[in-house]
Amino acid sequence: MYGRGEGGTFSIVASDVAQGYWGVAVATMPSAVGAIVPWADWKVGAVATQANANYWLGPRGLELLRQGLSAETVLERLLRSDAGRAERQLGIVDRRGRAAAWTGSKCMASAVHVPGKGFSCQGNIVASEEVVRSMARTFEGSDGTLAARLMKALRAGAREGGDRRGLQSAAILVAHREPWFPSSWGNFWMNLRVDRSRQPIRDLDRLVRQDERETAKFLRSAAAKRLAHARRRR
Image (tube, rainbow, N blue to C red):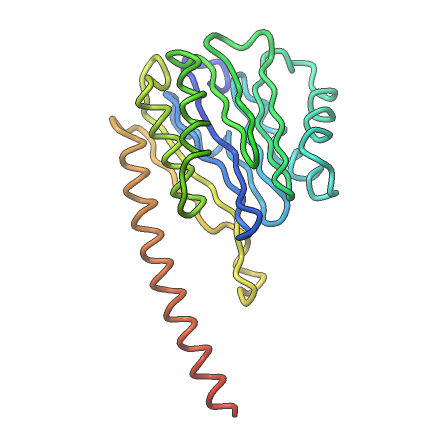
């Protein structure tokens, strides 16, 4: 849930530090969840701000993470600066994969968070706490790219009932960079959103799979071009 509309939100923030990926996946009933909840930056970390969301905790969280602070320290500073913290829910993962989370006492039930190694899952106004716990178990037991694992966790949450008032919005944000990418390309490896859909997670999953296929094709082509260029210079 964000703002004062009626709807629950379940999300996961996670990292694959070894491969250099940080990201967030989220689903809810209100539209445009991708504009509010997920925040991520390469070699910095990721933040999910939800429940009666304070939008500014996203960019402020990344600003603090850029200073090299731990997820726990960033969480403490964000909460200390926010008079409405009892209504907030936050999940944070830092550049080293350390996770921290918060569920305020005034968040609407069921509201719970489950942090783990390299990730945190959180949800409010979900069908039951099992929504979030299933997401955590699924992420821990999965393999593949970070985007694929995020989607597996999101699907697991939906299978347990997800937002108890229904779903129509989902989003995923993944930050990554190849070493040779121009700085002007930015750090968003994947930034996909689905709104006003009867099955937003299914639709988002389809977009993620298509995006990963197209990206893999692009990287193979780019690698071939760089190799050909290097041979011409010999």
